[in-house]
Length: 250
Image 1 (cartoon, rainbow, N blue to C red):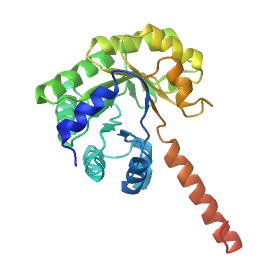
Image 2: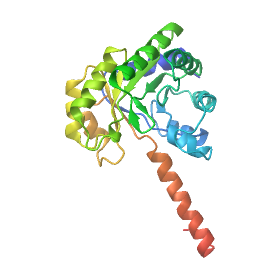
Image 3: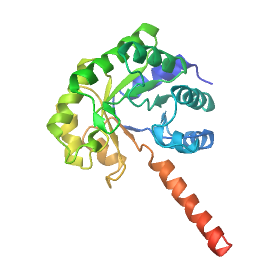
Image 4: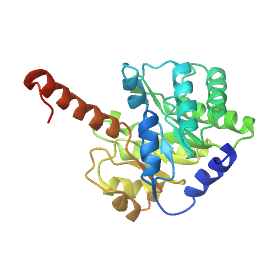
């Protein structure tokens, strides 16, 4: 079994070159299956974790999120990146304390989103939250990757100029990796890689693209968010419906 420090070092190294897939388990069985499939790192999914508790995405308490992360870290020896929503704290001081608690779970990385509810934080507020998260991580003395996120899926249409400006600002505030879930085209991903200053995470959901496609334009890591959980629960619903209506399984 690797140590937490070794996992964090391995996770940091994955961001230095090439492109890796970082799928999103939501319980012990899915984490173990993804490890057995050969993946080198895992990322939590706030949606999948919440659904497993019978809650809506975003409805888990801070303590529930931290306990879930601690569980994922303990179930395999792979590095785990935390989907840490907006960092939870209302004030910068509270956010700093909660980020330190997240580091204590053993995660190798954590992300900070720039949304509050269904709207964006003003850029200057979002930047300060990323800066506070960076300072909190540094204060622990632990080598944890910080991901700055721009929630592009909230935009209709996506404003790439705004996305890029926000992500570059988050890099300036200390983010090690940048992520804009909601970009659907390879052209947008390629532009993002060209115009930001840190490694980029891309999401495959609803893109029709592959990890190889993302790698071809310089994306460093590729995740799937809640897609695996959504597909699994969709299959469960189909089985349950057939059992209830036909008395049989597919």
